[in-house]
Length: 598
Image (cartoon, rainbow, N blue to C red):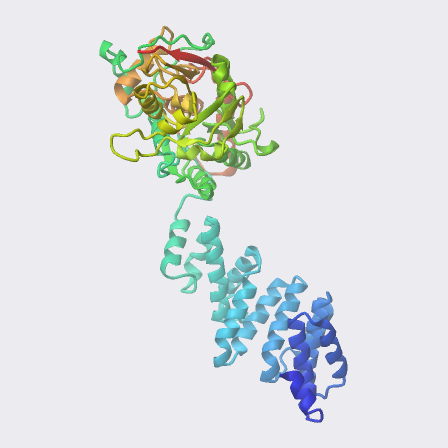
């Protein structure tokens, strides 16, 4: 339309203004050749609106060409001048963008304020939208600094309410999206006025500001526990860990004092436990003493990757001097990195995923400790006990939470070649029929299975295989470890480490195992991990002072003491024959035990 106007009315007095408008439109379309040509044709534009608009267009071209300082020099003489409404909006925007391009962020904010206040009523919505878009690209620290300056100096600094609202709204977005507690608290300070947030955003900001995140406190002898108790895929594992942790800390009070009876022994497997290796020497383990006042605080990360660090921050703000967490490798990797960054002793219940060298595990000087066992060692032990597992295709039966640890279409995993995994949670197609694909396995002549779900899943599988009179090998990882009854045509081997799978034995751990079973039920691998982690953490914090500290040197000092004591502890553990760490990992011998046919 502009080009047609220039062609149809070449002698019209508005042609210079039209050429400058064409230059601006061309720059918006990245047609710099046309823009340069039109600016050259109007270089001698007459003083007034046309000349002002040419100056603004020329400044824009300089900025887009990488010369924002020169652009700003051209624009500054127009500040305070009664610029024609036709050019004003373009001028205010270009002044702001040129200031930003020269890293004058605070100056740009003052220009945006002037832009908002100078806009006519019919322009205000469009201007606010444009300013909001620019503000969204500014760094958090700049926005926070500008907002605090506006609040601190009030009206004397000369800013309008609209720019303050836009800055505050952007900071609310940043605080709630990133979980920035410090920023949330700043936004809700008593001088914030009514410009911060409303509705759901205000509620979320308030919850964030009143959380413990961002605080750094040691409250006496406090241990933090982070579990995904609301995650459907890990809820059972979390419950088992919690039973072990409560026992290790002597909670509920008095529960550990119950004496075992002959009936209690029947709750444990009837196959004698031989153990994979002789017990290492360790001092007698004293029962938890209530007078030491060891406290437990818990948080739930819901199994959400974005919830790990904020929940750990909550535990740090809640006064923990050691933390227990991580039921999967990805969470372990994040938690161990957080532990190093915050100087917090942390026991990861499983090894971290090893996507790169940084996740290969904690170093001897770190604050992170790894209690669990690498899956590859378990598979190797099972394959040694049953070589057919390495010679034929193996069907894995897994929990939902393990799906990313297995090739989805089958493939190599350690010494085994796996078929596509089958979920332990699949329901039967029809009532009374097997819930596992028994007929399909028979058709494909499958004769080897690997269960890494639960012992319940293993029991269901063996019952259905036994009913179908199938033959083959069923291997159970530590997570599914058990000594279940089965038909003679099946060979069942279970990974074993420490007291897992439980059975009557003759070592120093049996009395405690019987008392646990009588009080809290059977012992699984996850239960044993929880018990060991809590026992180690309890022994590490028991000698800390009982008072609270919040100054940084004292907090760091107590957490360092806890880390050093944790590294040096020797005690009787359930998940290993060892009694202390090697570096920051727990050594253990993993073997396989065979369950006799019924």
